[in-house]
Every structure is written in structure tokens, then in C-alpha cells.
Length: 260
Image 1 (cartoon, rainbow, N blue to C red):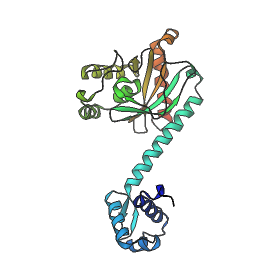
Image 2 (cartoon, rainbow, N blue to C red; image 1 turned 60 degrees about the vertical axis):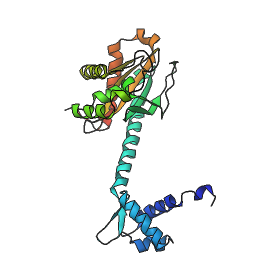
Image 3 (cartoon, one colour; image 1 turned 180 degrees about the vertical axis):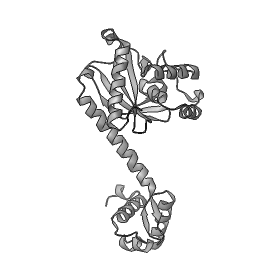
């Protein structure tokens, strides 16, 4: 084993323990873990105690160990994101009317949106989108669409966690820079059903976004369609907003959301 592989032996042992517990016919005892994985008893007990504390393992009434609920949370999150991305691309395959646009899918993480899927158009936008990219949510159409999809209590909680004093400087002169402006924008999004980024992220770039909802109606993500400002004359704002809204509705439907 190389030196680089030996830098975190405790982590490797923890993974071996998780694999062993998963494959065991019945919850193994600490002594079983030590014996089967050839670990010193003190090492096994120490790892098991920490893994139980972190929710990776749970102790049964027989003092054996089974996988903890924290792993289920992680698995659920991974599955949710994987399903979301796959359904996003499935919907795009059926929609020839959006081939002229760059289409993105983002999720809200704190005060930012992270791009989890993207299909770029052949049109030069003056800005590139890529999976993993992050932008301040308040400047993006998808971020504001997600915020507008929250209930009032959740939105107030988000504002409390991310007060205006922590907001970044606007990326362009059009960027939102006050709570009053943001609240007004959220209200307008709720009324019309889509959000508009009018060159807030990049000069000359417009984006129209709508919220994707899960089966419970929670705003899970945002879909955005982007195009250069020079191309706006070919469409109406209402039409572009409707396209974004229909895309989000189609993905939401495939995730189990039903209106009413």
C-alpha cells in the first residue's frame, strides 16, 4: 500500500466497518468487528463509539451494530439529486422548442445556487455555464424562482440566515442590493409564475427561471433558459417566461408533483 493510501487509516477502517455491518447476517458485536477486521479491541471500540455518535451506526438491544439513519439521509439526498438531473435531461430530449437556449438546472445551497445540470446552446452568450458553478442566488432567475417557491415562513427564515449585510456586491448595475427590492421581486414572481434575470449576472445576458417542485410541492430546484440580450427581439418576455415555467412543470410532474 502506498504512503498516500495510508494517510487516513481511521477513515479506511470506518468504511470497512460499514461494509461489514451492511453484509452481516445479524448485527455484529464490537468483538466481532475487532476479530473479523483484525483490529485492536481498543481501536474497534473507539471507532464504533464515534460512528455511533455521528449517526453512522446504531446499537441494537443485543449490543450489536446496524447502519445508522444518517446514511439514509445521505442516500436519500444523492438519490433525489440523481433523479432530478435524469428527469431534467429526459424532459429536454422531448422539447425541441428550447434548442435555441442554454438551459440550466440549479439547487439552492445557503445563499448561492449551484449548477447541477446544463445544456449549452450553440449561441455565444458571453458567459459560460458548467456543472458545479456557483452564483449568488439573489442575482439569478433560478435562485429567485426557488425563493419565490418557498412558503412565507421559510423565506423569512432564509432572510434571517442571510441578512443583507452578508450579501455580495452586485455583479452588474442591475443586481438586487436591498431586501425591499428582493421582496418586491419575489412578489412579482409569485404573480406571474417565473423569474427574470435582466442582466444581473452578466451584461448582455438574460435568463428566465421557474421552480421545480417535488412530490410534496416543495421548491426543490430551479430551471433557467438563457439567451443573449441581442436575441430578445425574436421573442416576447411573456413567451420566454412561459417556456421556463412549462419546463419546470414538466420536470415537477415527473418527480411526482401534481397541482392541487
